[in-house]
Image (cartoon, rainbow, N blue to C red; front, side):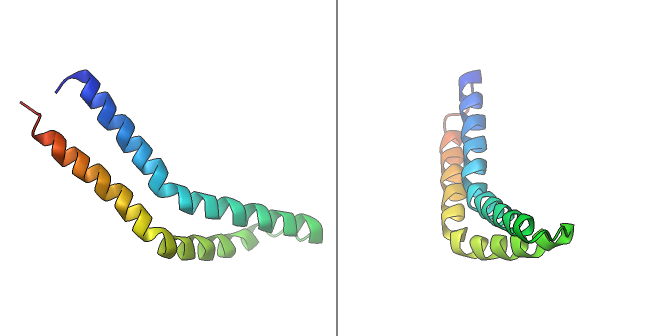
Length: 88
């Protein structure tokens, strides 16, 4: 296995990680901005208020996006197992 293949595998693994985690991070971002906007409008400055809505949103998003996340991880695994044949 040469250096180019190792770099390609590393890039693919990082991309798959970003792609699989993107739905959860997007949900946390949207809910966080929404709650922060609500806090700014109502002048309620409670730090723990953002935790529960983010947790619920990420849980619901994880349930909805789980098939997509699994397919991304399985595709990466299939690619890695396919590269095993090329190793000397």
